[in-house]
Every structure is written in structure tokens, then in C-alpha cells.
Image (cartoon, rainbow, N blue to C red; front, side, top):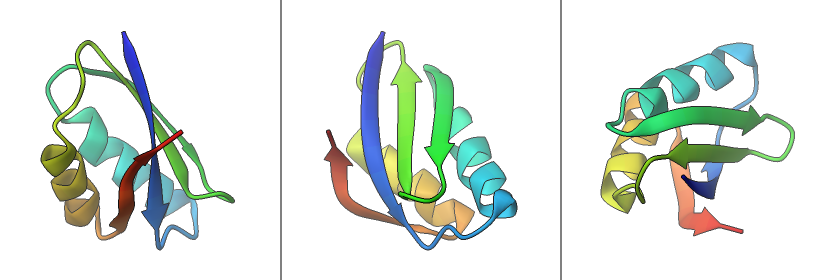
Length: 72
């Protein structure tokens, strides 16, 4: 399993968490998504490393912005 942490800008409520989680869970190979609303950190666990472009597109589709790719 691969675990990556992403910074997401614009999330302010439980709806935001659900929207981002739903979009990221739709990516192939994603096993789990955890969102820490106060920090804006989103942790994704997947079978293989995720394509950064696909992660950015999923976050954008949810209505938010991926900031600077992944963090640690």
C-alpha cells in the first residue's frame, strides 16, 4: 500500500469533506481517503502510487484546489 498526503485549499465543512472523499475514492486503486478539515490535509491510501494529474483533477471536480501536489 502507498499512502500520500495532499494539501487541499477551500474546504470548510462536512460537505467539502464528503465531496473530496467521494471524488478521490473514485480513482482506480484508491483504498481509503481521510480528510483533516482544520489543516486541509487529505491522506490517500492506494494500491499503487496515484497519478498526480488524476488527483488534481478529482479535487478540482469536487470544487477545490490541490496546493503544491503532495506533502509529507
